[in-house]
Image (cartoon, rainbow, N blue to C red; front, side, top):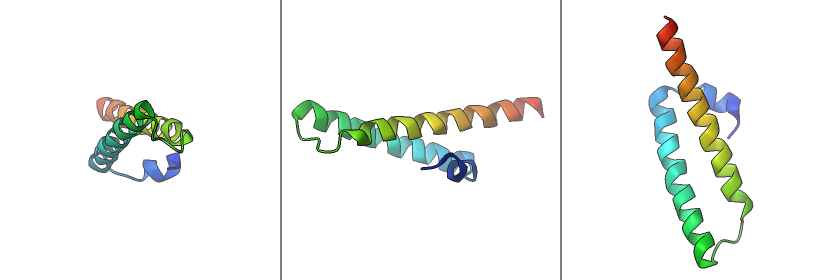
Length: 67
């Protein structure tokens, strides 16, 4: 996902996406450990998307504190 797409989402939607990426990352790590993972690049994509979400959640948290 692009950062611009994520910025448009609400906090609840971002938290839902984070949970989805957490589950996907767990599954990818499990597949990697068992040698079943075909697309290893997907792991880094999921990690980056998860980090983007965490950054946006933190920014929204800070914005609430300044209001």
